Every structure is written in C-alpha cells, then in structure tokens.
Image (cartoon, rainbow, N blue to C red):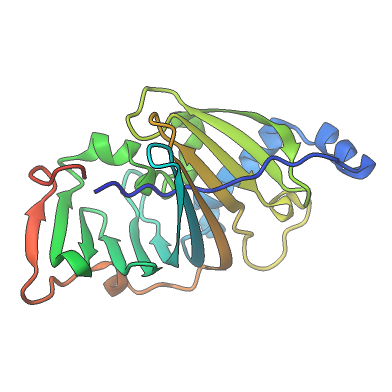
Length: 247
C-alpha cells in the first residue's frame, strides 16, 4: 500500500511588472525562514497544531491516469526530537484513516477490513523519509533537503515556489515543490501565525506526482490528544508493517 502525500503545483507564465519586482526583491533565505519558523515553536509563538481540509491529486506514471481525493488532516507537534501526532481522514473517493500518536501509526482501509500497524520507533529511518511524515517536519526542512528557487519563483497569485531535493537518496521522494503563502512574508504579523504552506508536490523516483493543497487551515485550536489514538474495529485484521507488502 503506497500512501503518498503531495502537493500539486502548476507552472505559471506572464508575470506582471509588480510580480517581477517582488520576485527580485525577495530573497530565497527569507522565503525559507517564513516557511520553517512557525513550526519551531520558539517562545510559544509558533504553530503547535493545525487542522485543514486537503485536496489531493495523484498522477500515476505507469497507468497514465489521475486520481483525486480529499479529506481532513490534523497535526499536533511535540517536543524537540519527538515525532508529531497526526490524523489523515480520507473521505472520498474511498474512506481511509492514517493515525499516529507519535510512537505507532495505523493505516485503516475499511473496505479491506485490515489495519496496518507500524512501530515508528523501530522504523524511524523509514519514517523520516516517508512523504506522509515529511509534512510534519516543516521546521527542519533545511536539514533534510537542499532548497532553491523554482523557475518561475512566483505563481500568478504572487505566492513563492520552492524546489527541494533530498540531501540523501530516498525511495519515496526524488523532488519536492512547495508553495509558500505570500502572507507568511508580511512584515507585520497580527493575531495567530500564518500557516505558510499553500501546497506541496512530491515527485517519486518512478515519476509519480502527488499534489496536496491545504484549505480552510485552523491553527492552535488545542486539538485533544484522543484524536490521535486509534481503536481497532471489531472483526478487523491487524498486520504489522514488516509483514505487509508494498506498504
């Protein structure tokens, strides 16, 4: 079972003069800082949790077709060195739950009547490379990726596009594109921190492209811990990830 979470991005042309000027004046370092800083939780002013609607578009290279899905994602960050807790609820086209309490991850597809359970402490190396988990490590992207300006650097709305390549070879990610909200670079932030990630696209070594766009993002709502626990439904088989093929 391959669960690839990504963010689709179109390449835009025909910039206005003001957009070109913004691109020229905005440094790469400033965009990276705007993306990473809210997830570092320094001084208690960052993003400690978020909930959003997500829309996923996957282009499968071998089948030459597209798949669409959407649902709700919740992420809660812990202390330095801890894996965040998260929940991805796919609503359409097929219900699916991906839940982690930071130590164990469960993948449940009701139609299969199976749960795949993964021990993240045992599988930490794999977990750090998995696209499912890279989105929970947005505060340390420069540690794991080489970031550069995409060409073009701006989309037609004036948001910034970054191109990322893993520092170490990964079986899951060959290349990443991330779109950073222009509002995250505003000189004066007011109220709650701006969730900086508009969308992200993962291209895997097989040429598959998965895009995820985030909408209606809610930050620092104090998501209860029990949202990141999973109870195995009655009559459902539990498989260990080490025994599950293609996971």
